[in-house]
Length: 572
Image (cartoon, rainbow, N blue to C red; front, side, top):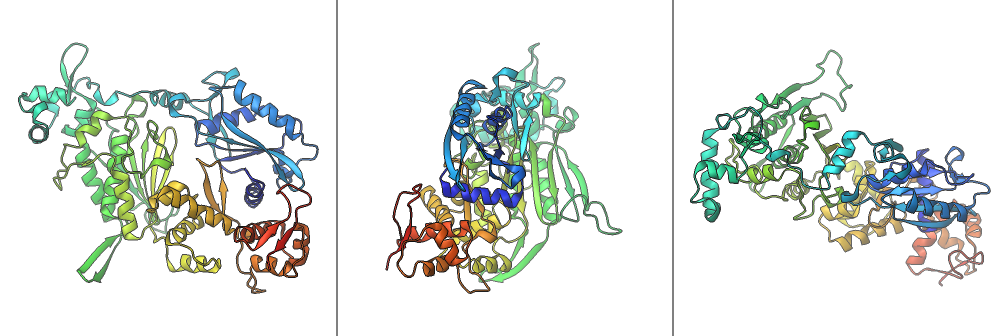
């Protein structure tokens, strides 16, 4: 982390008044705290994060007097390599801040194949942690079980269901399925009888006694009523009148609709999509092709979200008491399923073409060939296209990108209801005084304004190539409106506190950049402190303005970045 990045991050911490989810700050005045090991485990098991040692949270995140940066750095490096299993790989730097030195470590997320990372002295089940709010929380036995299953390929969907028989399957849908696979793959299925086809597709499998029974995947896709065997393997819908479950109108209903959807997955998807659409508003407008109706959420987006939740959820015995949950609020739609992302797929990968990994391969294979009773389409027509389809439809509708919240035991899709670039947001972006922003930078700033971190993946989901996404985010940082948190691969970009942005000062009509230009107008070489006194600007605003002017070629430094002799001179 560079000194400039640390300054920005410290300002953000001071504004927040506490640690951030992916930033942990400790004073470490007496040496390396033992609790740092918990944090190293938590960041490794989560999405990575930043550890800052040498700042006092209870003293407005100021440097700790007498902090021994070199000793703490060495102790941290030793803890990473010797006290955690598997060892934690991190980038550890000593960085200057406000006349002192602090230790900054960037912790990467551990490869899913090796999770959980745990404190060796406590053992796997007592020493494995994850992040919860701004602190560390010990992993439950269930969470550790899910991490273990993530190392291989679960087989819950191919297991025969005790007590179920072929009579529990829909005979009509079986014939439709067989006809389709024989047409699509004649070499594999054309000369097989019905029972052989169903066994090859893992719809039927022999139990320990040799009796053929429907598998869990077969029952969920072709069953007449799978909930006879698994009552909670369904979907539920709750529609609230307000923005939270507690926001109830005076003398009004607690919720507008509360129901569950049973049957096989194709039926659940159709019924749930229709129910969500009934509970959202529709706007009509006329264009060159005639009248068009537009829902708050595109129907295709809702369908893909619900289908993905049913396909990718955890079906292990631990989770069979939990349904897929669909909740409609006044300002958002939430679809949640038990079980987080599977395999090597991360939140940053979501939306990439061809990115897929499923814990339920039998179910995924069957849903490509099982039809929706309402439309006749296949439930999952093309694997790995679900989220790209959602992103495309949302961009077309001018809606915000979805939020993905991935935890070990739960995955949640959140769809905001509003338009991303409404009149208020557009006016706010204009007030920043930043000229030449691209359309995607406008969208990124709108996302940040909502309190959402923007990543390289966010920009790619807006339609940019990876290198262009990085360049546009870096430009927002250089302009002084965004701050980068985290190491390069896991970097997140947040909005800089308004008081520290390089925006127009309404009272004086001058931006910090222009104020620094004036301070250097006579051609003299000035220190940063001299420029603060001449311009009347804060330390951070001067630092950011100098960075902007230096990148623009208007200002030349006279010495290296950390030299006490460093001065700045404007090119005339």
